[in-house]
Length: 303
Image (cartoon, rainbow, N blue to C red; front, side):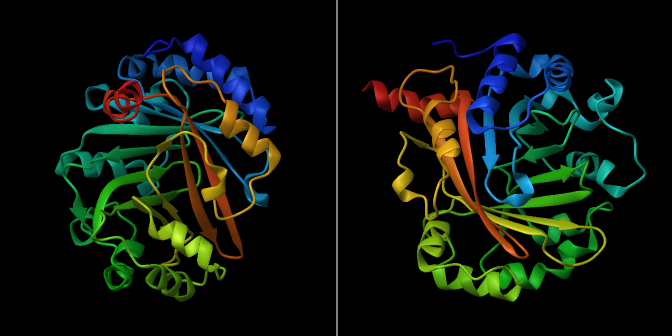
């Protein structure tokens, strides 16, 4: 199979994935985004994502990596009329970050039915930053500094990615773990209770404990944590038995048979997420793998 894809191939794959999961799709919305960022697919990583829960019903997102040399995704989106210019600090967040800190690549999130740029992230796994350093950015919401003690108490120390949600006017911190620094299930349960999230069962906590990263979403209007997610690393093959919650049939169908453009077993990612009053799962299916992901997932398969 190819290690890259054309805009037309990716467009068709998004449509097929949306059909599998029963999500809305608009070629008129997807096409302009992929055309605007077409040069990103020379260094490919594309993943399709669906989430259970009432808030995300009928939605499919697609995400892709873009090289540093491409420049600020928000500025490009503005130039292609894929975003609305705003005076809100969210519009300056990634620029403030990339002027001060090294990073490896951008990740860009968009919707299969909702047009334009939804979110962009700076990814810096080799140059992880402390919360205290990020809190000093001029456009950073006060909520980051307000929650610094909470993060430290629960083992959330090293940030490997930061995202700006342009449509929601929120931002996200992605905390990185290794085998020795992953929060224990009890610590995760304590954190969820402290921030007012629904009480998880032991199976959810054990799954969250295996996470490579935790994603915390904050806003500029209050110190409240709006959303928190834990995700183990992507894995080859499909084993729905490890998911600590029922997987609806359409999500299982999507995870098992969404289009992909690489050899070897399918690569999926499952995450557990909480918002006030709601607990749900995220199902991701990789369509294109980065060079590093191909090395990790494909070479092992071919041995």
